[in-house]
Amino acid sequence: MNDDPLAALIVDGAEVDRVALASALMGRVAIDRATGRFVMDDGYDRLDAKRKLLILLLAQKAALLLGLGETDRLAYRDIVRMSGLREGTAAPGLRGLKDDRLADQDANKAYYVPNATLRRAVRLFESEGSR
Image (cartoon, helix red, strand yellow):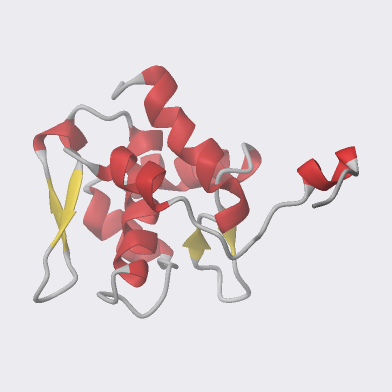
């Protein structure tokens, strides 16, 4: 046991809160077991553009954790296609998620939600509902 109060600041970048992730996705996006593709639920349509983009990134992470995907990252063109948003809406929305430190980009410019910020991303759905 560590009595150092600073130890509470340490996060495990590999740790994922699966319960929180599932609660954010529930009623918004399902994942097809056979194909790994996303199936948008009714709750997805009620989300604003920023949350639609974020929920896709979270769903991609869930697909990876379930063994239904190969990565937790999505290319910009795939995000636009899956989200149903226009590029003029998706691009600033993704930039906003990065500015808010809810999402990041890898060396190939693919977007993802870092494990260390997953709880913050999920709280966006808890605190503000499905606006």
